[in-house]
Length: 76
Image 1 (cartoon, one colour):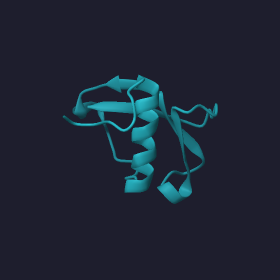
Image 2 (cartoon, rainbow, N blue to C red; image 1 turned 120 degrees about the vertical axis):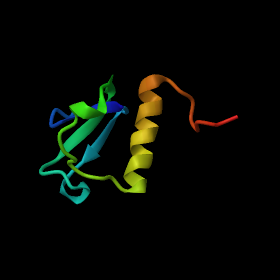
Image 3 (spheres, rainbow, N blue to C red; image 1 turned 135 degrees about the horizontal axis):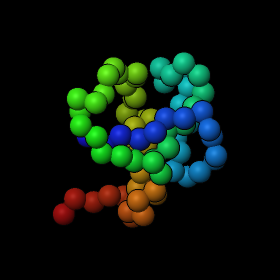
């Protein structure tokens, strides 16, 4: 499973997506798509929140920017 760091250290990067209480987070934070990792699913302990489709679109865009993948991502 690929995961990204969620932090309160907001740097204003294009590879960050701001989250807050409206997204199910306890306080304002960002998901940092510059900090991706692959882990075993068994390492995850609990679900924090589920993001809506509009917010996930922002996460996908930030991930493309962090990885240098052209937008939009096209399946051929």
